[in-house]
Image 1 (cartoon, rainbow, N blue to C red):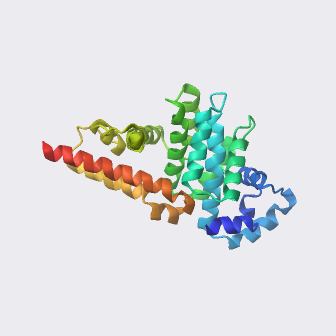
Image 2: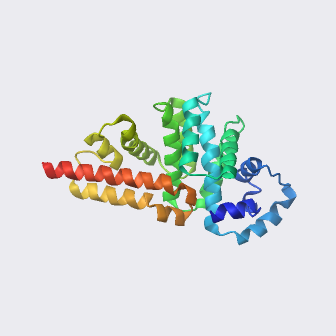
Image 3: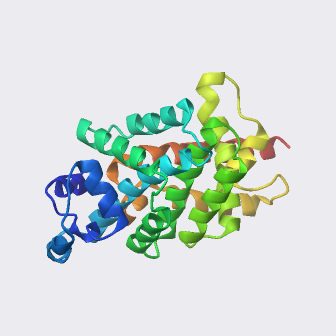
Length: 264
């Protein structure tokens, strides 16, 4: 939680002149004079690069989530529940939770600067594609809670994908993974075993894949979602839970596919 302590201490001037800084400052109840931006930025050098990315990731996650939820014209109760569920999973302290809620609300504004927010996140993440993919996964998963993506939601998510520097193929692959993994995440509630098709989707492959291709897909996904590696690249420590759940789902799907293939 080192990033949060430094954030509350005022050391987030690196974003003071950008859209993320404006959103985060408002969510925290701080106002920055534009003339102070350069001074704050110089002071922010003392904040580690990873902490900068963690702060940017946290702010962008909840602000963009609010904007995507509003994409179809209104924010449904289930979308609000989804955001609150994520906050509970992250075990945010009261001040973090209040900040996340304020960011979500800010994202619902009609004039919300989506492109600037996503561009700034991409700049902070640099070439850390796994971190950008994780961000997109969270946004797609949040958008799916009230049912299949409609044309407006899909268009907005593709716009985010493009500005993150990812491709439409990346988007479709992540969407497939989430739809497959959803069967595993719903399992305790519906008391049913995910199908073999669900398992293949959770690995992003088809039943026609060879054993070698399945193993390769599994290792790639485990590497992309490894909690320790994601935190080292800039995922806030509080979001380890999300990455851990994903690795558990990937491992369970892989084991189900292996058992089915051995049985034949």
